[in-house]
Image (cartoon, rainbow, N blue to C red; front, side, top):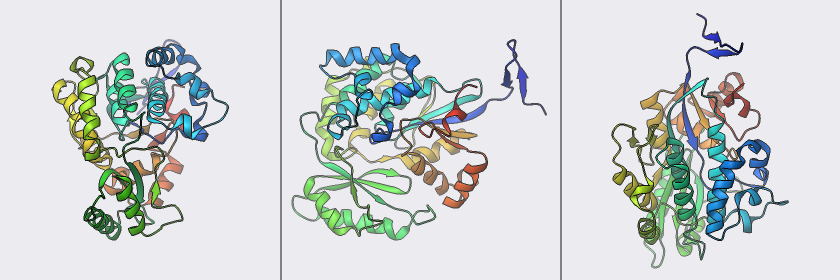
Length: 361
């Protein structure tokens, strides 16, 4: 059966669109390699970028265009939340604008951690100006001092399957650390084959002593990250509620899957509850990105999954989350790698080889 047609301009168009779930990245995806991302891929988005920078100017903050145009990547300049959040949002949203909607039907969106705020914008639950306000406000909450921190540790084996021994180790370490006076440690994010832990400095140091070194990398601290998705951010949640009114939020136009796996639809969303989750539970309780991916796959049955840029650090955790549920028939890292070589079902727009697959021809 022919699955294409020719439009009035002679272009080949698909008769049946591919269903896709779109995933927004979180903090830590704009690194040295991504410097200049907006300039390389989004020269035609000057109006969109200018609107973000107009708002940032009212807050006395450097513009994202200037950040992206810096001659050298700087941890001090590019990783603080007040800069990283807006920069990553701009890159991801600009990528989303470039998706080929003639080829793809976007059936749902989700995101990892800070990517939840971006997902709200992708789905239309935050209009562009509201998105700038929410993302900039929440990203700037620790500009006067980061509260706690995060570290990452693998929870999988060499086949990218969950390793029960590592899971038990992580749970035991969390319990042991919290038994020590002055130490606080929590699960922050379930991130595919990784667990991100959040805690105060004493808790993180003790966790590093208890977790066996792996691959000369782990346990690894996440630079300039606060204790996101933990009770240590109760004060941040309260400030967010005080500064971000209900009228910033609206009904989504595309279904959203949150960090609990709950679906918010364009038909039944209570915007007051959406705001309460976004500024409440989402800030102070664990974010289960793996479950968000599982629910999106099972409920929306996409043909492909598209991860927005910048960067490609989220590609592995998405694949690991899919392997855990036999998504696309993948059961191991080897299955995933072989399938991607032939016909990528997971498209990362931060990967310059895969990026053209998501764009209009």
